[in-house]
Every structure is written in structure tokens, then in C-alpha cells.
Length: 356
Ligand SMILES: Cc1cc2nc3c(=O)[nH]c(=O)nc-3n(C[C@H](O)[C@H](O)[C@H](O)COP(=O)(O)O)c2cc1C
Image: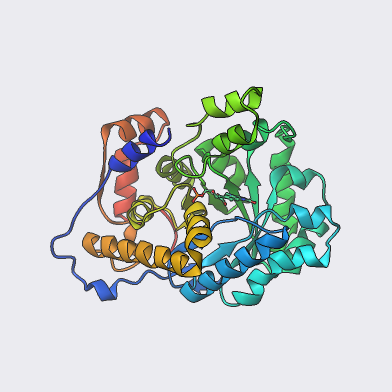
């Protein structure tokens, strides 16, 4: 699916230009509510790092950006905190995010297979020590399967572990992929078990099959499996539709290669509540420093605002009501997945995709 399929999927999502938008560009309001906060923009910096000394300064910069733009931010996997039995210097590499970003949602992070190894009390402590507002549980079966040391037991018991965590944790649980997308079958099971937030991290961006392929020697079987699965997963826009079609009660974060404001606008129009990215902000931060990262976000948001304006959309809440036309491959995909494209679009038009 990557990258050609992803581009063609995005090209098949056609937004309809409104020649008299009915508002002024300056009046487009991009704010959204998320986890009890009012974000200025419908954006989250996805989970990236934590644990190592070098990750502290990256998290510091990301937190500054999140705070300046009033957007949400996730930390990377908190497994190192568990592995070091809550060592202070390790905690600090994550806690720095909350210290800097006081007034935006901060999301903790743990892998789903770790839920087997720890009690909910330890997860509560993970959330508390970094002052998080929610815990993201990441699903990464493809990544684990392409690692020699990978944990490849993703049995059914994990669903029930998630249910227990949702019931007992005391803060919301966000279930996220890491780059291969969430299907409606998985989203629907998660909803039944009480999960209200999913993050698609679909297959149009950071590609862990490839990352793992290149981490392994050329002659290794993992290298080969990773290369062959270079396009594995559900493209992000389709994963957004799949999750959204499960229920209007799900809060859907569209991520995975959402690296431009235009793509962000398409996902919000399809029914995502929020969009997120990881790789481009990390890349610009490393290559161009914090100013480069600021430039990236400023441009991104300028495009998003402009597209909203040209759709005649005054707020993110209105975005999902904007008309769109789906191309033949997307329509075909949806029909075969049991989603009626015309009904989906009609629901959108009537604002029936999600509660605001
Ligand atoms: C360097 C890097 C590290 C990441 N580490 C984590 C992690 O610890 N936990 C997690 O849930 N996702 C992790 N991710 C996945 C991202 O949170 C995100 O879901 C995914 O990269 C898709 O977004 P993108 O295509 O914009 O990069 C990582 C991504 C990158 C690029």
C-alpha cells in the first residue's frame, strides 16, 4: 500500500471547492476539545521517545512546540521506566513534557504485550509519575514479528487485559497502532470492551516493517520478511473510515503519514476527530532544530486552515459535514468491507458521524 497506493487513496478522496466559502479565512476556527482541554488546533504530536538521556532534550523541544501551538502530545513507550523499576533519571526524560506543556493533554504510552506483565497499579503509577491525562496502548504486531527478539504472542487474552485496564486505570485509554492501521473488526471489539479512543497510525507513513528490515543483516530472514511487507497495512484514510463507521461514539485520531495540511483536511472531512504525526516533526527537529519544527507546523496549519476555508468550513466540527466524492478504488474497497459509501457520505452530510 505504500507509497503509491496511499497516494492514490488520497487522490481518490476529492474535496469539493466552494467558490463562495461563506466565511473569511481569518474566521476559520480550528480549535477542538480533547481530554478536557481546548486545543487550538486538531493536532497531536504522536508518541516518539523517552527513556534514554538523549530523548529528554527531544521531548523538551516537542513539549515547547505542543505548548506554543496548544496541541496534544504523546510520549514514547514508558517501558524503560518499568524496566528500571521507576528510576528517577529515566522518569525525568518523560516528565519534562508535562513540566513544559502545562495546559495541553499529555499522553502516556505502553505496549499491549506489557499489559500482561504488570498490574494496573503499576500502569497508574506510570501515568502519575509523568502527569499524563491518558494512556496510549500501542499495538505493534508487525514490528514485533520482524524482530529476532520480538514478542510475538498477541493472543485473545490481550483484549481482556485492555478491558481491565480501561475499567480500572482511572484515565482514558487510547488504543493506537504504530503504522499499519486499525480495522473495523478490531475497533469494534475494542469499543465493546469499553475503549472510546483509537488512533489509526495507518500504513502511509512510518513503516516499521522497513525499519526492522534494515535493522537486520541482509542475510537474515527478518530482513527479507520486512522488505516483502514494505507495504503492509491499512492506508490511513481507509482505517479512519473503518473506525468511524464502527460508531459515532469512538474518538478517532487519524495518523500514519498525515504529513501535510491537505491530508489532515481530508481525514477530518472523512470523520477523524483529530490528526497526528510523528516522523516529520522529529525529522525537522533533528535536521533543522526547533525553528525548523515550528516552520513545519506553521506551514502545515496554514494549509489546513486554507483548505477548511475553501471548503466553506468554519470549524473542525463542521469539517465532517463537507461534501466529498470517493473514487472507484475506494468505493470498491468500502463495498467489499461492508460499508455503504453513499450511506457513509449521507451520514456525514447530516453531521451523523460523531457526537460533538
Ligand atoms: C522514531 C519513532 C519512535 C516511535 N516510538 C513509538 C512509541 O514508543 N510508542 C508508540 O506508540 N508509537 C511510536 N511510534 C509511532 C508513532 O507514534 C506513530 O503512530 C507512527 O509513527 C505514525 O505516524 P507518522 O507516520 O507520522 O510517523 C514511533 C514513531 C517514530 C517515528
